Image 1 (cartoon, rainbow, N blue to C red):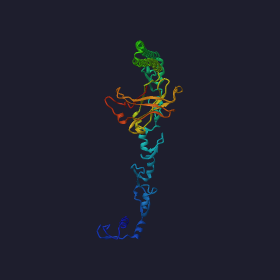
Image 2 (image 1 turned 120 degrees about the vertical axis):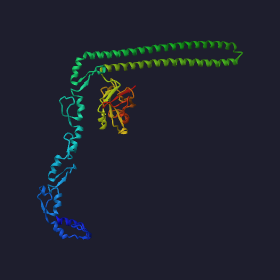
Image 3 (image 1 turned 180 degrees about the vertical axis):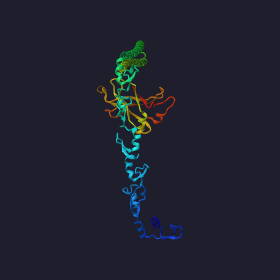
Image 4 (image 1 turned 90 degrees about the vertical axis):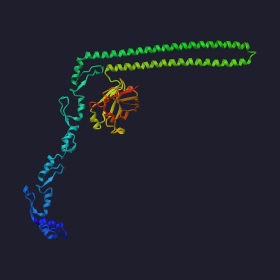
Length: 460
Protein backbone atom coordinates (compact mmCIF):
# COMPACT_ATOMS: atom_id res chain seq x y z
CA UNK A 1 0.00 0.00 0.00
CA UNK A 2 3.03 2.31 0.00
CA UNK A 3 2.49 3.16 -3.63
CA UNK A 4 -1.21 3.76 -3.04
CA UNK A 5 -0.48 6.12 -0.14
CA UNK A 6 2.19 7.95 -2.07
CA UNK A 7 -0.10 8.24 -5.10
CA UNK A 8 -2.91 9.80 -3.05
CA UNK A 9 -0.52 12.41 -1.67
CA UNK A 10 0.86 13.09 -5.09
CA UNK A 11 -2.65 13.58 -6.60
CA UNK A 12 -3.42 16.26 -4.02
CA UNK A 13 -0.12 18.07 -4.63
CA UNK A 14 0.86 20.61 -7.24
CA UNK A 15 4.37 21.61 -8.37
CA UNK A 16 4.92 23.43 -5.11
CA UNK A 17 7.14 22.89 -2.11
CA UNK A 18 5.57 20.72 0.55
CA UNK A 19 6.62 18.29 3.28
CA UNK A 20 7.98 14.95 2.19
CA UNK A 21 5.32 12.26 2.65
CA UNK A 22 7.98 9.92 4.08
CA UNK A 23 10.38 11.93 6.29
CA UNK A 24 8.09 14.97 6.69
CA UNK A 25 10.97 17.41 5.89
CA UNK A 26 10.02 20.72 4.36
CA UNK A 27 11.10 21.74 0.88
CA UNK A 28 9.90 18.57 -0.85
CA UNK A 29 8.64 19.11 -4.42
CA UNK A 30 6.34 16.52 -6.01
CA UNK A 31 5.05 16.21 -9.55
CA UNK A 32 2.03 13.96 -10.39
CA UNK A 33 3.08 11.05 -12.56
CA UNK A 34 0.14 9.66 -14.52
CA UNK A 35 2.10 6.67 -15.72
CA UNK A 36 3.00 5.60 -12.18
CA UNK A 37 -0.60 6.31 -11.08
CA UNK A 38 -1.96 3.92 -13.70
CA UNK A 39 0.67 1.36 -12.77
CA UNK A 40 -0.27 1.53 -9.08
CA UNK A 41 -4.03 1.45 -9.74
CA UNK A 42 -3.58 -1.64 -11.92
CA UNK A 43 -1.99 -3.59 -9.05
CA UNK A 44 -4.11 -6.55 -7.89
CA UNK A 45 -5.08 -6.44 -4.23
CA UNK A 46 -7.40 -8.26 -1.83
CA UNK A 47 -10.63 -6.78 -0.35
CA UNK A 48 -10.24 -4.90 2.94
CA UNK A 49 -12.87 -7.34 4.39
CA UNK A 50 -10.73 -10.42 3.66
CA UNK A 51 -10.52 -11.31 7.37
CA UNK A 52 -14.36 -11.22 7.55
CA UNK A 53 -14.58 -13.77 4.74
CA UNK A 54 -14.59 -11.81 1.45
CA UNK A 55 -12.49 -13.58 -1.23
CA UNK A 56 -12.48 -10.75 -3.80
CA UNK A 57 -9.17 -10.05 -5.62
CA UNK A 58 -8.95 -7.32 -8.22
CA UNK A 59 -7.25 -4.17 -9.36
CA UNK A 60 -6.90 -1.30 -6.89
CA UNK A 61 -8.92 0.89 -9.27
CA UNK A 62 -12.04 -1.27 -8.63
CA UNK A 63 -11.80 -1.45 -4.81
CA UNK A 64 -14.10 1.58 -4.26
CA UNK A 65 -16.87 0.23 -6.50
CA UNK A 66 -16.54 -3.22 -4.90
CA UNK A 67 -17.01 -1.79 -1.37
CA UNK A 68 -19.81 0.69 -2.18
CA UNK A 69 -21.93 -1.13 -4.75
CA UNK A 70 -25.11 -2.84 -3.49
CA UNK A 71 -24.13 -5.94 -5.46
CA UNK A 72 -20.46 -5.73 -4.35
CA UNK A 73 -18.81 -6.86 -1.09
CA UNK A 74 -21.36 -8.65 1.08
CA UNK A 75 -19.05 -8.39 4.11
CA UNK A 76 -18.90 -4.55 4.06
CA UNK A 77 -20.63 -3.00 7.09
CA UNK A 78 -23.37 -0.51 6.10
CA UNK A 79 -26.05 1.49 7.93
CA UNK A 80 -29.78 0.55 7.80
CA UNK A 81 -31.60 2.35 4.97
CA UNK A 82 -34.60 2.94 7.31
CA UNK A 83 -32.44 5.20 9.54
CA UNK A 84 -32.89 3.03 12.62
CA UNK A 85 -29.12 3.36 13.36
CA UNK A 86 -28.30 -0.34 13.00
CA UNK A 87 -24.95 -1.21 11.27
CA UNK A 88 -24.62 -4.71 9.75
CA UNK A 89 -22.77 -6.51 6.98
CA UNK A 90 -24.47 -6.06 3.59
CA UNK A 91 -25.38 -9.76 3.39
CA UNK A 92 -27.53 -9.46 6.56
CA UNK A 93 -29.08 -6.07 5.82
CA UNK A 94 -31.89 -7.29 3.50
CA UNK A 95 -33.35 -9.59 6.19
CA UNK A 96 -32.99 -6.84 8.78
CA UNK A 97 -34.82 -4.27 6.62
CA UNK A 98 -37.68 -6.67 5.78
CA UNK A 99 -38.23 -8.55 9.07
CA UNK A 100 -36.30 -7.01 12.00
CA UNK A 101 -36.03 -3.23 11.58
CA UNK A 102 -38.37 -1.34 13.99
CA UNK A 103 -38.61 1.46 11.42
CA UNK A 104 -39.74 -0.70 8.47
CA UNK A 105 -43.07 0.22 6.84
CA UNK A 106 -46.00 -2.16 7.41
CA UNK A 107 -49.79 -1.89 7.27
CA UNK A 108 -52.19 -2.45 10.18
CA UNK A 109 -53.84 -5.89 9.70
CA UNK A 110 -57.17 -4.44 10.91
CA UNK A 111 -57.56 -0.99 9.34
CA UNK A 112 -54.79 -1.11 6.64
CA UNK A 113 -53.11 2.06 7.95
CA UNK A 114 -49.48 2.31 6.73
CA UNK A 115 -46.77 3.24 9.25
CA UNK A 116 -43.54 2.22 10.95
CA UNK A 117 -43.50 -1.20 12.63
CA UNK A 118 -42.89 0.21 16.12
CA UNK A 119 -45.85 2.63 15.76
CA UNK A 120 -48.31 0.10 14.29
CA UNK A 121 -47.49 -2.52 16.93
CA UNK A 122 -47.35 0.05 19.74
CA UNK A 123 -49.38 3.25 20.02
CA UNK A 124 -51.66 2.53 17.05
CA UNK A 125 -53.10 -0.63 18.58
CA UNK A 126 -54.52 1.43 21.45
CA UNK A 127 -56.35 3.81 19.10
CA UNK A 128 -57.14 1.58 16.08
CA UNK A 129 -60.90 1.78 15.48
CA UNK A 130 -60.94 -1.74 13.92
CA UNK A 131 -58.85 -3.46 16.64
CA UNK A 132 -60.78 -6.52 17.93
CA UNK A 133 -61.82 -5.92 21.53
CA UNK A 134 -63.67 -8.25 23.93
CA UNK A 135 -67.02 -7.16 25.36
CA UNK A 136 -66.44 -5.23 28.64
CA UNK A 137 -69.36 -7.18 30.14
CA UNK A 138 -67.81 -10.59 29.28
CA UNK A 139 -70.84 -11.64 27.25
CA UNK A 140 -68.71 -14.03 25.16
CA UNK A 141 -68.07 -11.89 22.09
CA UNK A 142 -64.31 -11.19 21.83
CA UNK A 143 -63.80 -9.71 18.35
CA UNK A 144 -65.77 -6.47 18.44
CA UNK A 145 -64.13 -3.53 16.60
CA UNK A 146 -63.25 -0.89 19.19
CA UNK A 147 -65.37 1.71 17.36
CA UNK A 148 -68.44 -0.52 17.81
CA UNK A 149 -68.08 -1.11 21.57
CA UNK A 150 -70.61 1.59 22.52
CA UNK A 151 -73.11 0.31 19.97
CA UNK A 152 -72.68 -3.25 21.27
CA UNK A 153 -73.30 -2.14 24.86
CA UNK A 154 -76.71 -0.81 23.80
CA UNK A 155 -77.66 -4.38 22.80
CA UNK A 156 -75.48 -6.50 25.14
CA UNK A 157 -77.63 -8.78 27.33
CA UNK A 158 -75.15 -8.34 30.23
CA UNK A 159 -75.18 -4.51 30.16
CA UNK A 160 -76.55 -3.03 33.41
CA UNK A 161 -79.60 -0.88 32.60
CA UNK A 162 -82.11 1.16 34.57
CA UNK A 163 -85.67 0.01 35.18
CA UNK A 164 -88.15 1.42 32.66
CA UNK A 165 -90.26 2.66 35.59
CA UNK A 166 -87.50 4.87 37.02
CA UNK A 167 -89.57 7.93 36.08
CA UNK A 168 -92.10 6.96 38.75
CA UNK A 169 -89.55 6.00 41.43
CA UNK A 170 -88.14 2.49 40.73
CA UNK A 171 -84.37 2.70 41.29
CA UNK A 172 -83.53 -0.91 40.35
CA UNK A 173 -80.59 -1.59 38.01
CA UNK A 174 -79.81 -5.01 36.53
CA UNK A 175 -78.59 -6.65 33.33
CA UNK A 176 -80.69 -6.29 30.19
CA UNK A 177 -81.53 -10.00 30.00
CA UNK A 178 -82.71 -10.01 33.65
CA UNK A 179 -84.85 -6.88 33.28
CA UNK A 180 -87.88 -8.87 32.00
CA UNK A 181 -87.76 -11.04 35.10
CA UNK A 182 -87.47 -7.91 37.23
CA UNK A 183 -90.56 -6.41 35.55
CA UNK A 184 -92.56 -9.55 36.28
CA UNK A 185 -91.39 -9.86 39.88
CA UNK A 186 -91.89 -6.19 40.71
CA UNK A 187 -95.15 -5.72 38.81
CA UNK A 188 -97.06 -5.00 42.01
CA UNK A 189 -94.50 -2.45 43.21
CA UNK A 190 -94.53 -0.81 39.80
CA UNK A 191 -98.31 -0.54 39.91
CA UNK A 192 -98.10 1.04 43.37
CA UNK A 193 -95.54 3.53 42.13
CA UNK A 194 -97.75 4.42 39.17
CA UNK A 195 -100.73 4.73 41.49
CA UNK A 196 -98.77 7.06 43.75
CA UNK A 197 -97.76 9.15 40.75
CA UNK A 198 -101.38 9.26 39.60
CA UNK A 199 -102.52 10.37 43.08
CA UNK A 200 -99.91 13.13 43.05
CA UNK A 201 -101.22 14.26 39.69
CA UNK A 202 -104.78 14.26 41.06
CA UNK A 203 -103.66 16.35 44.04
CA UNK A 204 -102.05 18.87 41.70
CA UNK A 205 -105.21 18.87 39.58
CA UNK A 206 -107.36 19.50 42.67
CA UNK A 207 -105.08 22.35 43.67
CA UNK A 208 -105.43 23.82 40.20
CA UNK A 209 -109.20 23.50 40.38
CA UNK A 210 -109.16 25.33 43.71
CA UNK A 211 -107.15 28.11 42.14
CA UNK A 212 -109.67 28.20 39.28
CA UNK A 213 -112.54 28.49 41.77
CA UNK A 214 -110.73 31.36 43.46
CA UNK A 215 -110.37 33.04 40.05
CA UNK A 216 -114.12 32.61 39.49
CA UNK A 217 -114.81 34.26 42.85
CA UNK A 218 -112.61 37.19 41.89
CA UNK A 219 -114.46 37.41 38.58
CA UNK A 220 -117.81 37.45 40.43
CA UNK A 221 -116.52 40.28 42.62
CA UNK A 222 -115.57 42.17 39.49
CA UNK A 223 -119.10 41.67 38.13
CA UNK A 224 -120.54 43.02 41.38
CA UNK A 225 -118.34 46.09 41.24
CA UNK A 226 -119.39 46.68 37.64
CA UNK A 227 -123.06 46.39 38.63
CA UNK A 228 -122.53 48.91 41.46
CA UNK A 229 -120.84 51.28 39.04
CA UNK A 230 -123.73 50.92 36.61
CA UNK A 231 -126.22 51.67 39.40
CA UNK A 232 -124.27 54.76 40.40
CA UNK A 233 -124.15 55.91 36.80
CA UNK A 234 -127.92 55.44 36.47
CA UNK A 235 -128.47 57.50 39.63
CA UNK A 236 -126.22 60.22 38.30
CA UNK A 237 -128.06 60.10 34.98
CA UNK A 238 -131.42 60.44 36.76
CA UNK A 239 -130.08 63.44 38.63
CA UNK A 240 -128.89 64.97 35.40
CA UNK A 241 -132.25 64.38 33.79
CA UNK A 242 -133.99 65.94 36.80
CA UNK A 243 -131.72 68.94 36.60
CA UNK A 244 -132.43 69.13 32.92
CA UNK A 245 -136.16 69.14 33.51
CA UNK A 246 -135.75 71.79 36.18
CA UNK A 247 -133.67 73.88 33.79
CA UNK A 248 -136.23 73.49 31.06
CA UNK A 249 -138.98 74.68 33.45
CA UNK A 250 -136.99 77.76 34.32
CA UNK A 251 -136.28 78.43 30.68
CA UNK A 252 -139.96 78.22 29.83
CA UNK A 253 -140.80 80.73 32.60
CA UNK A 254 -138.08 83.14 31.51
CA UNK A 255 -138.21 82.44 27.75
CA UNK A 256 -139.82 85.68 26.69
CA UNK A 257 -137.93 87.92 29.04
CA UNK A 258 -134.43 86.42 29.06
CA UNK A 259 -133.40 85.28 25.55
CA UNK A 260 -129.73 85.41 26.38
CA UNK A 261 -130.15 83.12 29.38
CA UNK A 262 -132.06 80.69 27.14
CA UNK A 263 -129.18 80.47 24.70
CA UNK A 264 -126.84 79.78 27.60
CA UNK A 265 -129.11 77.03 28.86
CA UNK A 266 -129.23 75.43 25.40
CA UNK A 267 -125.45 75.25 25.37
CA UNK A 268 -125.43 73.76 28.84
CA UNK A 269 -127.99 71.17 27.77
CA UNK A 270 -125.86 70.17 24.78
CA UNK A 271 -122.89 69.61 27.06
CA UNK A 272 -124.95 67.47 29.38
CA UNK A 273 -126.24 65.37 26.50
CA UNK A 274 -122.66 64.83 25.25
CA UNK A 275 -121.55 63.77 28.72
CA UNK A 276 -124.47 61.39 28.85
CA UNK A 277 -123.47 59.79 25.53
CA UNK A 278 -119.85 59.46 26.66
CA UNK A 279 -121.00 57.83 29.88
CA UNK A 280 -123.13 55.31 27.98
CA UNK A 281 -120.23 54.56 25.61
CA UNK A 282 -117.94 53.99 28.59
CA UNK A 283 -120.45 51.58 30.12
CA UNK A 284 -120.61 49.68 26.81
CA UNK A 285 -116.78 49.51 26.57
CA UNK A 286 -116.52 48.21 30.16
CA UNK A 287 -119.07 45.50 29.45
CA UNK A 288 -117.19 44.46 26.26
CA UNK A 289 -113.83 44.44 28.06
CA UNK A 290 -115.27 42.32 30.87
CA UNK A 291 -116.74 39.86 28.39
CA UNK A 292 -113.39 39.56 26.51
CA UNK A 293 -111.45 39.03 29.74
CA UNK A 294 -113.93 36.36 30.81
CA UNK A 295 -113.49 34.52 27.49
CA UNK A 296 -109.68 34.88 27.72
CA UNK A 297 -109.62 33.44 31.24
CA UNK A 298 -111.76 30.50 30.10
CA UNK A 299 -109.38 29.82 27.16
CA UNK A 300 -106.25 30.12 29.32
CA UNK A 301 -107.72 27.80 31.92
CA UNK A 302 -108.66 25.25 29.24
CA UNK A 303 -105.12 25.34 27.76
CA UNK A 304 -103.56 25.04 31.20
CA UNK A 305 -105.85 22.12 32.09
CA UNK A 306 -104.97 20.36 28.80
CA UNK A 307 -101.24 20.92 29.50
CA UNK A 308 -101.66 19.49 33.01
CA UNK A 309 -103.46 16.39 31.68
CA UNK A 310 -100.78 15.97 29.02
CA UNK A 311 -97.94 16.12 31.56
CA UNK A 312 -99.80 13.69 33.85
CA UNK A 313 -100.26 11.30 30.90
CA UNK A 314 -96.55 11.59 30.08
CA UNK A 315 -95.62 10.78 33.67
CA UNK A 316 -97.90 7.74 33.78
CA UNK A 317 -96.83 6.42 30.36
CA UNK A 318 -93.09 6.74 31.05
CA UNK A 319 -92.53 9.07 28.07
CA UNK A 320 -90.07 11.92 28.25
CA UNK A 321 -91.33 15.38 29.14
CA UNK A 322 -89.73 18.80 29.37
CA UNK A 323 -87.18 19.45 30.65
CA UNK A 324 -85.07 16.72 28.96
CA UNK A 325 -81.61 15.86 30.36
CA UNK A 326 -78.98 14.62 27.89
CA UNK A 327 -75.71 13.02 29.12
CA UNK A 328 -72.60 13.09 26.88
CA UNK A 329 -70.01 10.40 27.91
CA UNK A 330 -66.32 10.10 26.90
CA UNK A 331 -65.94 13.87 26.85
CA UNK A 332 -62.11 13.91 26.87
CA UNK A 333 -61.84 11.53 23.90
CA UNK A 334 -64.50 13.44 21.93
CA UNK A 335 -62.70 16.72 22.71
CA UNK A 336 -59.25 15.40 21.65
CA UNK A 337 -60.48 13.74 18.43
CA UNK A 338 -62.81 16.65 17.46
CA UNK A 339 -65.79 14.26 17.40
CA UNK A 340 -69.26 15.56 16.47
CA UNK A 341 -71.43 13.84 19.11
CA UNK A 342 -75.17 13.21 18.57
CA UNK A 343 -77.61 12.49 21.42
CA UNK A 344 -80.47 10.02 21.33
CA UNK A 345 -83.64 11.60 19.94
CA UNK A 346 -86.43 12.88 22.22
CA UNK A 347 -89.89 14.49 21.96
CA UNK A 348 -90.84 17.98 23.13
CA UNK A 349 -93.99 16.50 24.67
CA UNK A 350 -96.50 13.70 24.08
CA UNK A 351 -97.62 14.16 20.48
CA UNK A 352 -94.92 16.79 19.86
CA UNK A 353 -91.84 17.27 17.69
CA UNK A 354 -88.94 14.81 17.69
CA UNK A 355 -85.55 16.52 18.26
CA UNK A 356 -81.86 15.61 18.52
CA UNK A 357 -78.89 17.43 20.09
CA UNK A 358 -75.48 17.72 18.36
CA UNK A 359 -72.39 18.75 20.37
CA UNK A 360 -68.92 19.65 18.99
CA UNK A 361 -66.64 19.82 22.09
CA UNK A 362 -63.72 21.36 20.14
CA UNK A 363 -66.01 23.84 18.37
CA UNK A 364 -66.89 24.47 14.75
CA UNK A 365 -66.92 27.52 12.44
CA UNK A 366 -66.80 30.62 14.70
CA UNK A 367 -66.03 28.51 17.79
CA UNK A 368 -63.42 26.23 16.17
CA UNK A 369 -60.66 25.44 18.71
CA UNK A 370 -61.88 27.98 21.30
CA UNK A 371 -65.46 27.17 22.24
CA UNK A 372 -67.90 24.29 22.51
CA UNK A 373 -70.56 24.40 19.75
CA UNK A 374 -74.14 23.12 20.26
CA UNK A 375 -76.82 22.51 17.60
CA UNK A 376 -80.39 21.16 17.63
CA UNK A 377 -82.00 19.21 14.77
CA UNK A 378 -85.57 18.28 14.04
CA UNK A 379 -86.01 14.56 13.34
CA UNK A 380 -88.78 12.67 11.57
CA UNK A 381 -91.28 11.77 14.30
CA UNK A 382 -94.39 9.62 14.56
CA UNK A 383 -96.59 12.67 15.34
CA UNK A 384 -95.44 14.86 12.41
CA UNK A 385 -98.66 14.25 10.46
CA UNK A 386 -100.71 16.22 13.00
CA UNK A 387 -98.21 19.03 13.65
CA UNK A 388 -97.51 22.30 11.78
CA UNK A 389 -94.67 21.92 9.27
CA UNK A 390 -92.99 25.06 10.61
CA UNK A 391 -91.50 24.64 14.07
CA UNK A 392 -91.33 27.88 16.05
CA UNK A 393 -90.83 28.92 19.66
CA UNK A 394 -88.08 29.63 22.18
CA UNK A 395 -85.70 26.80 23.04
CA UNK A 396 -83.18 26.89 25.88
CA UNK A 397 -80.11 24.63 26.23
CA UNK A 398 -78.36 24.58 29.64
CA UNK A 399 -74.95 23.06 30.52
CA UNK A 400 -75.49 21.72 34.06
CA UNK A 401 -73.17 22.41 37.01
CA UNK A 402 -72.66 18.88 38.38
CA UNK A 403 -71.72 19.80 41.97
CA UNK A 404 -74.22 22.54 42.79
CA UNK A 405 -77.72 23.45 41.63
CA UNK A 406 -76.64 26.91 40.52
CA UNK A 407 -74.14 28.61 38.21
CA UNK A 408 -75.45 26.67 35.22
CA UNK A 409 -74.57 27.95 31.73
CA UNK A 410 -77.51 28.55 29.36
CA UNK A 411 -78.34 29.89 25.90
CA UNK A 412 -81.84 30.62 24.54
CA UNK A 413 -82.94 31.46 20.98
CA UNK A 414 -86.24 32.16 19.28
CA UNK A 415 -86.55 29.81 16.30
CA UNK A 416 -88.76 29.68 13.24
CA UNK A 417 -87.59 26.48 11.56
CA UNK A 418 -87.87 25.89 7.83
CA UNK A 419 -89.23 22.69 6.35
CA UNK A 420 -87.12 19.52 6.36
CA UNK A 421 -84.92 17.71 8.82
CA UNK A 422 -81.31 18.13 7.57
CA UNK A 423 -80.65 21.67 8.79
CA UNK A 424 -80.04 22.69 12.43
CA UNK A 425 -82.86 25.03 13.49
CA UNK A 426 -81.09 25.96 16.76
CA UNK A 427 -77.33 26.66 16.64
CA UNK A 428 -74.82 28.24 18.98
CA UNK A 429 -71.26 28.03 17.59
CA UNK A 430 -69.78 29.73 20.69
CA UNK A 431 -71.92 28.12 23.41
CA UNK A 432 -69.19 28.19 26.12
CA UNK A 433 -65.43 28.84 25.95
CA UNK A 434 -62.99 26.01 26.68
CA UNK A 435 -61.55 28.11 29.53
CA UNK A 436 -64.92 28.34 31.31
CA UNK A 437 -65.80 24.74 30.43
CA UNK A 438 -62.67 23.22 32.00
CA UNK A 439 -62.51 25.55 35.01
CA UNK A 440 -63.16 23.86 38.38
CA UNK A 441 -64.06 25.79 41.52
CA UNK A 442 -65.54 24.91 44.90
CA UNK A 443 -69.07 25.60 43.59
CA UNK A 444 -68.86 24.93 39.85
CA UNK A 445 -67.73 21.95 37.75
CA UNK A 446 -69.21 21.28 34.29
CA UNK A 447 -67.09 18.19 33.39
CA UNK A 448 -67.26 15.39 35.94
CA UNK A 449 -66.45 11.67 35.58
CA UNK A 450 -65.54 12.37 31.92
CA UNK A 451 -69.08 13.47 31.01
CA UNK A 452 -71.20 16.61 30.65
CA UNK A 453 -74.97 16.97 31.13
CA UNK A 454 -77.29 19.22 29.12
CA UNK A 455 -80.85 20.30 29.95
CA UNK A 456 -83.05 21.04 26.92
CA UNK A 457 -86.20 23.05 27.60
CA UNK A 458 -88.89 24.69 25.49
CA UNK A 459 -89.61 28.11 27.02
CA UNK A 460 -93.34 28.94 26.84
